[in-house]
Image (tube, rainbow, N blue to C red; front, side):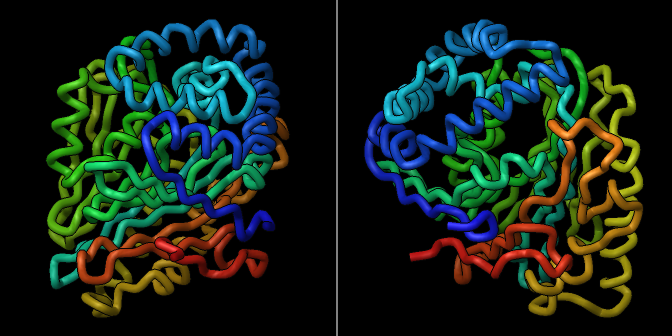
Length: 363
């Protein structure tokens, strides 16, 4: 498999069985992820991997208590990959452990079509060193919707949708505080992807006490979309605007519960650009079935205004090489129950170097 056409995994069974399959299938990639994040933690936070594992111990008790099935899956991943469970917890808590010092930027968009169906989409921007360790994963669990997601090796929840038509996208936010007695954001994403509706997802996160760090999850189903501006000290939910749109980048729009100093100068510019591009399409009369994945890739997600911090992000040579970001994949999910599925393109869409259009489900 090439970086532009990654491994596709189908995982089935109990949490432990799913984890073991994951760990065995992506053993090499998981070990490489640890090496990548070890270097990144040292660069951004002056933390060695042993320091990171110490922080992961705090999340270990949280996961055992709040989400024992997810913890059992992490134990399985560790067993399959020949690692300690703390290594896997650290990967799944990397956003929290670094206290938001990473510089990942993403642009997310949900657009309600005339028939009520929603397209949920994003460019996922991160260091190019992890691109070779991405995988397209389906997870079949008894009594739960089947999950289809793009994730990093070793990480249990990310960007995707499920057979109940619930989808998730993610924007990193840099803000304090971090509270390790709450859910890491990648675990929160997994719980959303196990939900039967946006309402169910929100209720689940609230019932478990919320998330450990400030992040934005754009969550949608066939009837509802909400921008979940989450933090350990208070949440805000953003509804669709009059055009049926929610757009988000890497700063909070409404949540004022946290200490959020400016960090990605391009984030407000990207949000304004996203709003401008969607408005142009609306003024052109684009609606209903005219809102297609190809249109969104061509007219929005390939946009290079304000490079390198564009919607289609390019590596900034002025940043340390360990945490330079670029757009690693684009995903557009159709959450219409009659046409449920997603198109994924790895690489920077519109660059001429991106990969083919891949589909989820792929069976």
